Length: 362
Ligand code: COI
Image 1 (cartoon, rainbow, N blue to C red):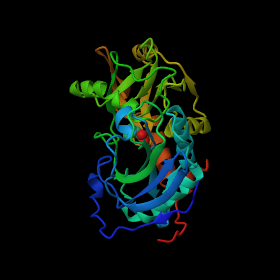
Image 2 (image 1 turned 90 degrees about the vertical axis):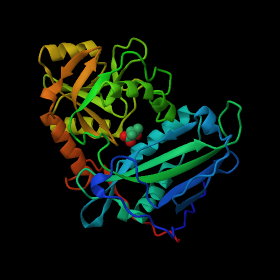
Image 3 (image 1 turned 120 degrees about the vertical axis):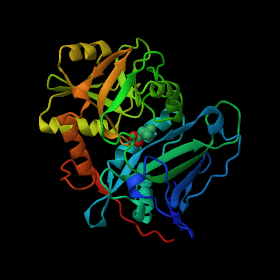
């Protein structure tokens, strides 16, 4: 791959949004990173250019057969204007796992991390510093060959866009209400559940809309065969604290291997809190609730960080968890993860990396 990154700066910088009202994914910075792929040349022409709409052939294969993958990571402004990324190597590994599942070409993760550092450095004034805010980084790949035959595309764009964000859920970091989905399924083993690809999210929307109509913010998915075992929430992995022990569904091929999920497991192990990855049935969860041993529940994700779950509803059986309030362990994890990410707490795991410019010529 050609590694000559070129930079073209915008002549019309945009006005920056109010940091206290960012929401999630509504504002985009002044520049983006792009590179192209063809079977003949491989990945080539890496460039940072002004943020702008794309010109694409309407026959581009992504529009017809959904060949696309994406990632999500965040940049934080630490003390002394230092910019920190959180475990970007994990995202690069995962995008190549997704690429492989979608018959798409792998990217050079080390090079893309350098390009992301450069892009984020150029956009450093867009990184918000209010509590609970960050700069969300969205790398994605789309199939661009104009062709209506069903086969892997021979052309792709890899793009990185940036968005200053606040909390993912409108509740902020207050506990959310989740509906346990009993009609639709998200993924089955052998499918694409472990990959970050648009189709997984498109097929989840019906259930999300129906949950919202009934007053629930998100959907908790059960396994696609028996609708018995807990898998994940729409945009998060899920954890339960039962009788002093923490459980999360094991990675089984249909669950996303979350970066925050992995970080929470490592933090809990470090703190000496018993944590295990295993199959958990929804009946087991209700039995724990009925016996008074279900102590806390929370979701984890890059966008959602650590999100307390205050209520679960499964076939009209409601569970109010921790009285609908944030549990102590959930809060401790939120403080630890966000503290490490923003450089306020010592990072003894070596998870954060500094984003510095490499001073490519503009
Ligand atoms: C993330 O947490 O980065 C995600 O990709 C979730 C997203 C679908 C909002």
